[in-house]
Length: 133
Image 1: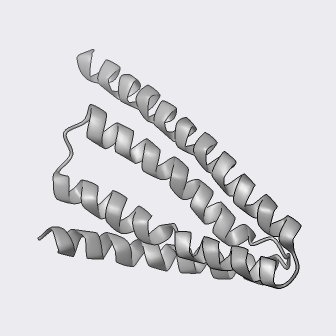
Image 2 (image 1 turned 90 degrees about the vertical axis):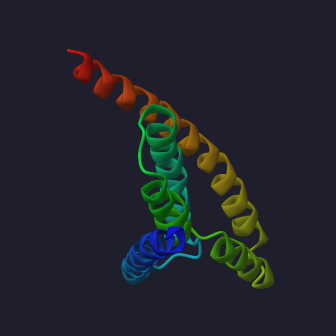
């Protein structure tokens, strides 16, 4: 049953990634792979937020957690595209852009993950505070 939940979550995550990616590609014409950068940065935030909120603070069904985290967010974010785009940039002589892409992805990814975790904590405290009143 776990695989079905992961698959359903993954289906929607992959579709959303595709829609966002094609949208950004149609309006932005830049060497920097902004669409993958945005998706991965947002995914870093979202995974930490949802994980902290559901795993630490609330008793959410395990299969639902799998659908959201492993399925949806796992399919939404894309490390393989990130590495391929980095290699493409380097092979095309855009080493500075590739290095910038890698460094910003890691640095901002960690910052967004931290922010997601902290916001998840704050959200849980607000929700729990309302339940106690």
